[in-house]
Image 1 (spheres, rainbow, N blue to C red):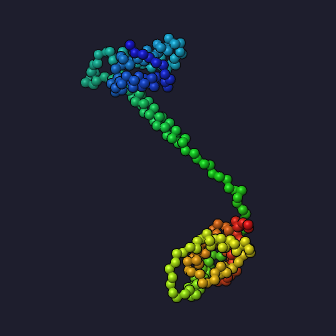
Image 2: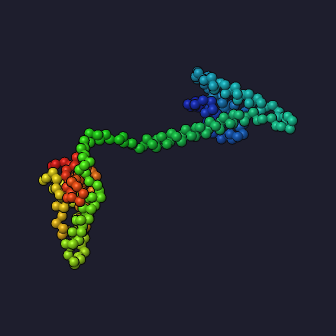
Image 3: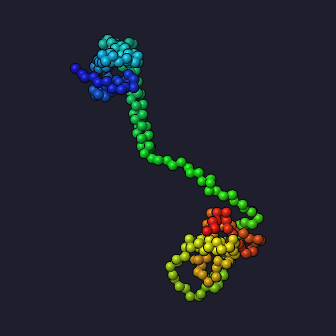
Length: 243
């Protein structure tokens, strides 16, 4: 005698799959007699507890009884062909349902795992934007700035001592940026060449050059030149804040 417990099933196929797994029934060789008995016990339990069973459960019960009846009939060969197994269609539906159920469980696990992550929405930084007023006639090409850098580099090389002393470089881009910013705090613009005494190491010239490029890219400074090969001026950019 089997004990029947009422669980929440998603239709008759879900109930059948539950019974097959519970009693370790081979889904490809279903003993229709025992499976039908188990299924009918569930239907009777619903009636005894006065639960209104869905019509689909009753339809499945009739299908099981019909398959069970066909299984009791003697199997005969017709024109050397074996009559189709009456369980075949039911087995196909159960396997298909089982696959869908496994995929559903997999997707639910993926959903739960994804819920452990927090996605930050894009931050609106429009209030930090400033209206930039760029004068195309006053800005210079990067080539001109490189030419100016080369002029400074050549002058430093000429004034450099002949003896070579190897020291650890300690002048950083941050220091060069602070130097330029301090100069702009005092005056709105200054000459590019005024940054140098032409006695500093080549490394400091390179560091100043890189700092100016970064500040120009960030809108902290503008670089202007009246005409080709003229002196270069550094002026406050739209993002430069006067302390």
